[in-house]
Image 1: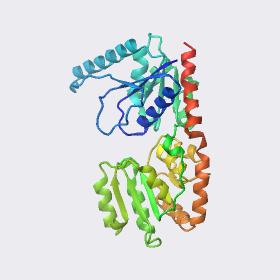
Image 2: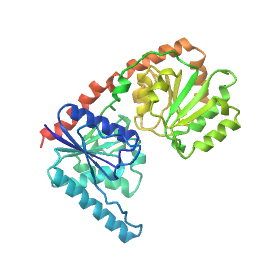
Image 3: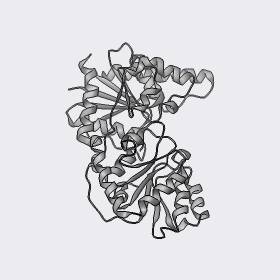
Length: 366
């Protein structure tokens, strides 16, 4: 049996953390060992460790200061702490997630005989912006065992020398979403995600305001929380739909909302392969999504065949898509059924096997 180390900043509820927990679960279910290595200690509201997994914290509790000397000392401390963990744990393979963590996982494992694969999520151009960060990533990734990506478009970000290391792997749909219980649909437009500028919930509220008179019985619910919450509430009130826009915050039963909504909308300016879109489609919910540069929504919907794609920031296109869907409930229902069929490759059994085979190839090659 193999030992997998998963390196991420924390287990806060987010896309990369959820994927890390799902990958850990499928390794544990197959009898392998999993240790999570996180920069930050356990905090309230995190995903729970899968049964059988352990956790090791890689950074000291007291952060270093911001002066140049303190930053250099902080990097040195992080480097050697992480390298000691690899020496002590002796995993058969390391899987790291997101940005600088990927670079650190590769460089701290050099010379230890431990293959390190990196998972680039989100849009790579934002994860590794122009300048020193991008150059450091491109250099470090030459020594990575592999580069796991969420979409085919993401390969174009990397220089030719690194593309041969790239492999597109499916997100693993959480097991609760693999089941579907048909329920009567309500006149509800739904979205979910952190309330920040990138998610662009304001565009959805404006579009809802523009169609609200045509569909007086419909409501809009935005699940999640974040810094834009008060601005969104003010915008809904200003547009005269404050009593029809609900912001219940972060909820634990997202699936119950998805099972009763009529349409799901994702208006992000940038995304990787959004789990929330997969989850909505798994519950036979027709979707409208921005066609982000990473190609994630396009990948999930087969270039718009199983969902409507609109331009980033395309408020007029969103209005048109909502009008088309809401005006024909029967076609909306059929689109939802097709959407569920389209996410088969992300269902746990198929996606878990893809991830196990991907990571175990590095163990066999040692």
